[in-house]
Amino acid sequence: QLQLQESGPGLVKPSETLSLSCTVFGGSISSSDCHWGWIRQPPGKALEWIGSVYYSGSTYYNPSLKSGVTISVDTSKNQFSLKMTSVTAADTAIYYCARRKGFCSAGSCHFDYWGQGILVTVSS
Amino acid sequence: QSALTQPASVSGSPGQSITISCTGTSSDVGNYNFVSWYQHHPGKAPKLMIYDVSKRPSGVSNRISGSKSGNTASLTISGLQAEDEADYYCCSHAGNSLFWVFGGGTKLTVL
Image (cartoon, rainbow over the protein chains, first blue to last red):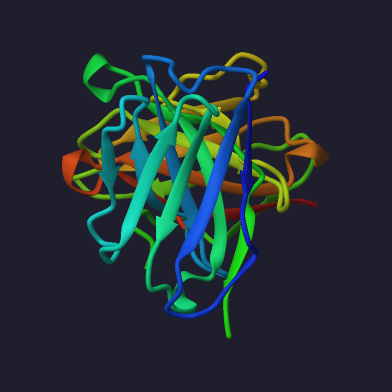
């Protein structure tokens, strides 16, 4: 059974960089038919897709988010990471990592496994 | 404001059926058959219940079904059970501009 686990600091100061990692257990991050993504949920608000990465390093980001978002992959550690620079209180949210299975161009794509989420609070 | 619109709450008695709607636009739900639904108990990992509009992953009860008409997708749970009480979210592919959009979530209460 595939499992994903988020890790990182739960408190970040405004204007600093938010850094989170997601470790994949029970499967390889180098699977050719999967992307790996970050999704967040601010308190009382909807889920919001942040971006995704393929094991090759190709990335896709939500254009509605401000610049400063970087998602990267480390296949040697079976991990992928999220960095968001210059955070504000509006970036306070539960951050989830998830596996996106399949290719839309091939007729099927969806997030199938998620982590439990990690609450990140932006506050001084 | 959520990209996809869901009712904030629905409720039903054990044994009854309920349907949760998810309304988008012709740029997402209406244009792609890549709608998925997730069951979420707070503090736990969201669980995939339906993908590609109407497909059920292995292990998901056949009481769960999904459909789509135009810009609106729907999740139906029949034979409600207490264990179905949770938050439910829809998600749709939105093309190469926005990629993925989610609904605001619906809280299902089993009376």
